[in-house]
Length: 353
Image (tube, rainbow, N blue to C red):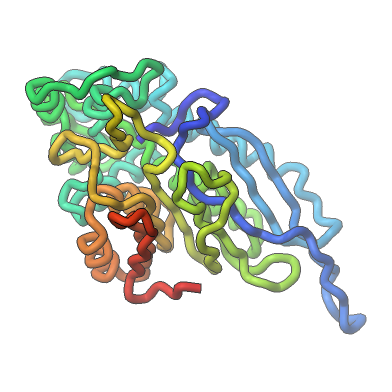
């Protein structure tokens, strides 16, 4: 849960996807009545402490000059709402708000993400929790300075006392109500996914039907590439020694989002023992379940993003069972066995292409 860092992204940031959308290919007209040849127009930039890449398949001569400005304006709105690295953001002001039981009005974006977070928290029985940041900081993640020894149980219990997404009441539309003064929120594990959804909605509202949106590895794609083929995204090989663009599996997306979480690049070493940056919000300790990567395909990237984080906390059997219970949600959980080999755990409806 360490998104929204100031640029540039550190080398140890969690690896996500590389997307495999092909190079622009002109479609050959087979008759004089066919439409103008298409190409994949690329728009790229920086946001949320990472990068974004967008491909829109449109006529070669289409004017997309104003699209990037509107995209960056929308992303700036989201940063100002949910970046914990901005002291004047909505989320930072809310985290300093101490009045218990008093409604704190928030933007529609902030409220929507919180509602989705509450649903993911319920579905995963607390394996995802947007209030886990006290534990993340205690274990030396989310800060410039690490730790040299494992936190003592008393410190972990103290931090656990400040964790609990249920301590935030969402019953008043457009407002958050604290049930405990010290509770704070970090939406880094789902806000980039929401950013993908927001940009995809913006592009759709401007009349485009074929596009791919990627922010920091979170992806949504709909329609087709300019060559008529489906958009494809690749899951990184979950190995710290592998290149960041090494593809482990490639999947096609059509009107779907995909997000991946992993612990194979971001960890700390204490006395020769590796500790994952994924903290179990129920126990207060880094996960140690053998899961090295979890990818989720869903209709929205917000949901896929949060579920991918939760699947890192659950073991593979629990994770697959959760995926199989959810409609129009599929996934792949990768486990490193005792022999060091990778084991794939697919949900029932996932096609291992």
